[in-house]
Length: 309
Image (cartoon, rainbow, N blue to C red; front, side, top):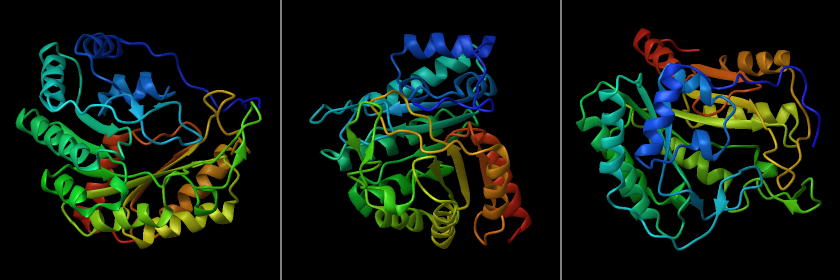
């Protein structure tokens, strides 16, 4: 594993709001991707009141070469999860925890895509029904391209629909070395064009903000990063995040390069010159939910002002 440069660092999670959220999340048996995916920004995001819940269990049907979430298939769907999630959020608020922006994400459940989409939709509705003025962002899988699943999500009216493109087209199935010598692909069961089609579908609904994220440091070139940003812009994506890939352990794809803060600034500037992209969060420690509330406010403000790049 490559030695991390000085600019790759995150603060130790502290603060009363972080501790309150940690306690109540554990008590209600809720999964957060912040914990499961070992996000380096957990302390900052939880202290700001942004929480990312992972629904549909903690086991994914896919085996992406960058992700620390465990792999498996044929697990049950918990149809009471949306109500349990809503009760947990209400518990958070009753305990005066700061929570104003919720991101719902999930593992892939390719064996039960339609059921998974229903859980997403019902979770959004249950949170909205609490009437707590909490914005709801969903970070969804591709549901194998099933537009009936997309429509279930759309009808529940989330504030933001996020689907991560993750990396450039060339690297989806290209196998790379891990620290243990095993070759793994970045997104072996995903299709680049299918992810773009999903983002195009939701971008056509003007009441919803669309978002996507890219990891860099997996072996791409800078020109390929810009090409990927162009693709996201072409399907109407309005918010993007670009962050440094960090190898969870030796079992995952090796980091090919650590990009400098200056290079991230260059990527941000390029992104925000695009026609449809109105907000780009780019930096070494940026992840999908990083500054999610501020990104949404910025995007909606620019949309209301009629900002066109």
